[in-house]
Length: 273
Length: 295
Image (cartoon, rainbow over all chains, first blue to last red; front, side, top):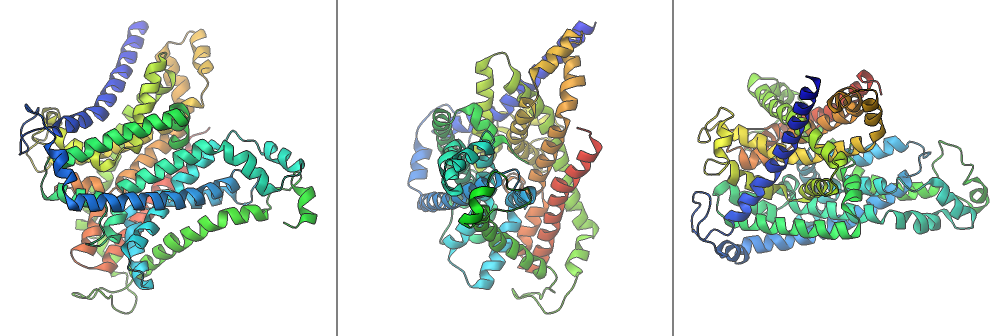
């Protein structure tokens, strides 16, 4: 009886794992398949004829192409700033004896729990008051705020293995504290810096709420253009974009696995809260 | 730190002192947050206390709590309730499915399964949410191949209320990888020896799971639940894209106050209320949970 219950429980757990994996993967595969649909309208699943028409539609749409350029530039600039500031912060916070360490960490991580609409709206009011109306500047400001916690967290997680005594050893050998951090901690933090920067770029590239408040009719990010289109009418151009995003994600995943390793990465980006 | 003081005290620096280098390292980030988040949120709080002048973008003079009082009306409370109700359901489901997923990703005997699950979770974490929400609309929408499955939940896919199911599915797709990865961290911290010890004392694997692993992972499970809840109630895109105007979250409410009506002060009041609720969920409830669950 007990054995039977045990087997039933384990089957149930396996079923939950399988259901979760299918739940996460099947929609992506459906969108991927639909993006190659040759029909000019949104027909019943599955498609019969296949073509690249929706990819051509995406590439020839100036709104999407302009949005893509803005999003790429914004992602690079915001991720660069957030990575530098986050790495600096993490290098200071890695010292467990630092006065007010926990409070400082909480402050650095706090943007994660401020709803993004609030960040966007408050920055809109704030920049308008200061007379800053350039949409790109406004967007960079918002995107750095929302990505900073992620870069800091990733670098901090990768520094867990670095012992304070290693840095103090370098100092006792005559290095300045800054030099010791640069030579000992920064190389050790490489995986966290890469993971944090990738995470920051991806978050910025996908951001809607903050961008909706801070962009204007002439400077639109790709997500804003996509969401506007999704609300107006569902067509398959977005399926093509989604499939491109999926391919880019897979590529990024392979690159990150080669440089850092998935096991380590899961620890660095997964460590939250 | 001056050289004269600096040389000797690195190794013997007493706790509670902030070295100069650390100050230099944290200041840029703190300044940025103070300037671009602290200041603006404070300004928003002030804005929320100003009277609204209909037809004007500029708020009136004086101080009023009218916009907060307005939120206590049943119509508004309903939106908050709706947001929390969907958030609580989604957060519970993400624990229910995230825990087995995380456990398999940490303890599966097959290295290939472990790597596949971790790659899937990390991949989804970095994959565009907009693309995922679109994929959900395509798969679970009234024309989609999964619509019959959605109909099992009791609402026909063509019914307007089905939007609620879709928003829930969208949010679950968003929270599940995050929750699972947080739990991967929690399970990794537990030694497999504990289960072996339980097994050697005659416990079955599910016994060991329920009486050894789950209690030890409880703090991690609680904080994952709270993070998932906070992610749901502050989400904006899912109700925007999948809600069809039927599912209105407080985030959507705030956006329409600002974008459609131009009532900045009222939008600001909703924003400040949401901010307080989100922080209560994350920090207040987790402090409470820490007190209730002995480590």
